[in-house]
Amino acid sequence: MQHSRFIAGALVGAVAVAAVGGGVTYVFAGKDVQHSTIHPVARALYVKVDGHLAVHRTTLQSRIEGWYHPLPWLGRDVHDVSCPRHLKAVAGASETCTAQADGTRISIPVHVVKVEGKASEPKVTWKFDR
Image 1 (cartoon, helix red, strand yellow):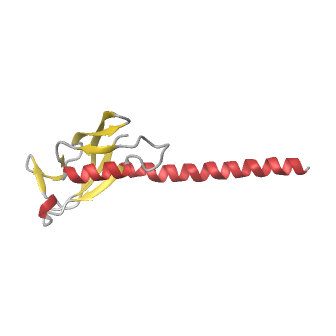
Image 2 (image 1 turned 30 degrees about the vertical axis):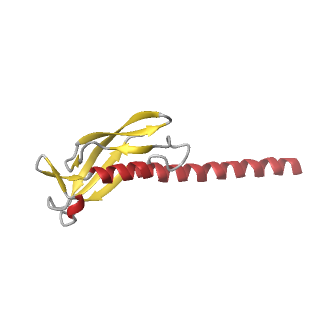
Image 3 (image 1 turned 180 degrees about the vertical axis):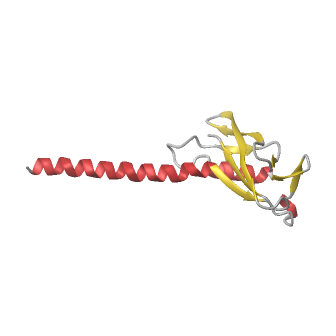
């Protein structure tokens, strides 16, 4: 009888660990989606592409580097992220950044999911692919 309780307890513990791990993975995987509000007053990061406000490439680079590998089982560790252009604040716009991972250069596509708010100060929702 005691052996059965031990097995049942071990199974419950394993399920609990798996549930917590799955929940943490879900939360961190959601960080692929980023939100950036473009403030034209902040001149250092105020840029335009084809007449549209854009998310500055340094913002893209730092967010990708910070969130690409938050947990070991979500993706590879990256560094030296480089985005050649700014991301135009237009739904459907896309760019491709690159990064160093495991000794090779990899491509990281970036897409604008939606743009909300005033045209003069848009909130851009964008996503990078792992």
